[in-house]
Length: 264
Image 1 (cartoon, one colour):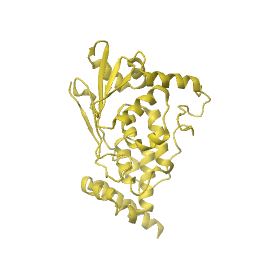
Image 2 (cartoon, helix red, strand yellow):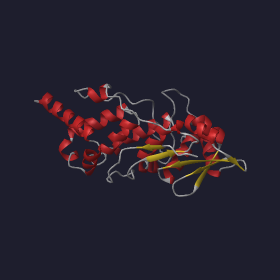
Image 3 (cartoon, one colour):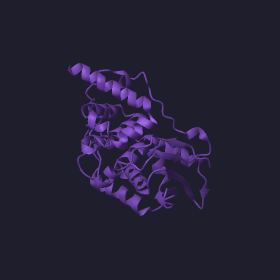
Image 4 (cartoon, one colour):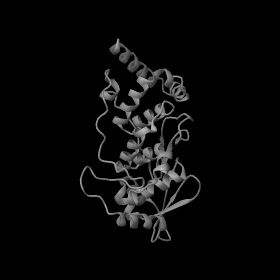
């Protein structure tokens, strides 16, 4: 099989959960499953001179550490017993018919029916994959094994350990976008906004937000950069961004200049 690749901006080493450049490779028999990212330069996010307040968060996030409310304010939470059952099915791997290979050479057991329902991208990969002894094999490469484990577990039960989710939040944001899992993307955005962002990692998060189509996160990052420009502009993340993406640096400088002119 060919391995189309997704190249993300190279991130600075100062970010806690990033490990350099994200380069997720989606296995497929042809290049139709390459996910290209195109920035809309006409979007108000990129061209607005007055930085707006970020919009309200999408959906409702459960405050519990290991579960996530998929609803949008509705009283349709799944009983804990049901979540535990799906979580156990994933962890035990009973009746699994999929092997998901990861970067460290090991694999994760999964069930094709659930993966097809949870992610249209995974469904396409499974449809193209070859079957050997009743097992379909696919690969999710370019991110740590533990991040893939958390990702697949979330597809089963929406359960997660908050400490692990925070550790791999940037990888999970990329996975949620690459494999079209909006519920996981909402959890990642929530965690990033709730105290995870800092002057050291905001440039990395901004670049991922642009590539992963997260306008709200982009606005939050720009506001932090404008308010803490002296500190952030001397960070390692800014230096990496300046060399790799001078156009973005120019855009951010224009935001800072415009903000200064408004306050004067």
